[in-house]
Length: 432
Ligand code: AMP
Image 1 (cartoon, protein in one colour):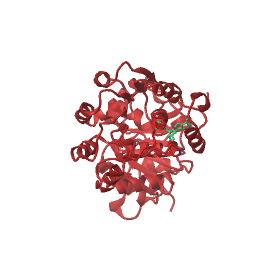
Image 2: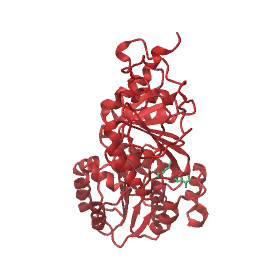
Image 3: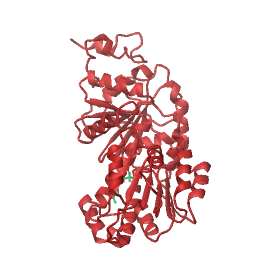
């Protein structure tokens, strides 16, 4: 199937050509005709499946067809509600790309930055508004936003909205938008609360489901390294000696953990930046841009900050810590292998994280292969519950990270583990 068979208008087809898109992804092939018919849609799809274009393209087409040449100010006719700033920005970029020849205007509003630029854009008039819930409610209260003329409402990443505690805000917004509208609802997972929420928003929706969360994007090559907590830094440095890893997105559980990893990498001359909630919006955007341009090799992120990170050709995701919520694992590794590209996901699992790893394997209904041949095995071996994987990573024992920097305060602690117990640490054993 090509985009030609979707009956798209010429301005959109031209934009898709510029983007280099020829074939719709499965969610696009299914969802675009449904949305173009004006129906409500319940989409079960995670990021990386092309779901943004699946709603942006038909919305642009519908609104472009309804445009009239009139003198009065534009009114908001489509609202896309999304949980994070990064995701909002990315959706904005998609509307800019696919809508470049349509004459429609959009803007993006999110918290954490001054509101003036956003309110200026709103006052100039927009057709499409992409918003995070908090800032939207704030600007509605200040009367910068009116949703009176809304025709299309999109709730994106509904499960994440729930996780992040935004469901109350979402309900407040739904309460004030016109009941006669077209609604599109996207969620990577469909737990009962989400189904309930969808029921309150959608009317006789068509359902589209692609790559359900429980089957994890199969093209991503996943593996796990059992490693002591204190040795995770060493393992990371070791893996990064593999120059094939041009860039990697590393996940930590906490902001503090992210900063610590960045510090260690910088000490070892590996360009790294952190992206998390304590950073200003500008710092986050700069870090993301540097990573996209590959001037930063490693981006270390917490889950919330990483939501919506969309980097073409991201080949490696490293779970420095195993997430406690199994779905988070799927979201994390979904940063790679996007739109059919190849991807590799490494997970570092210490003894305490084994329960979380088990939960993940249950959710994805597969056993993640274990890489045993690496220099920092656990001091206490886990049971043989997973098959071995070989040659998945550059795990040559002679290919270890360079000697830590001379400033002792900057060094990770001496590695611990079977291989090294009772012996000198590996960096002291090297012939120098
Ligand atoms: P999304 O799931 O919306 O976050 O999109 C994932 C990635 O796939 C983004 O980088 C898009 O630019 C890309 N993408 C979306 N649709 C297509 C397509 N039909 N062909 C190629 N790439 C696409």
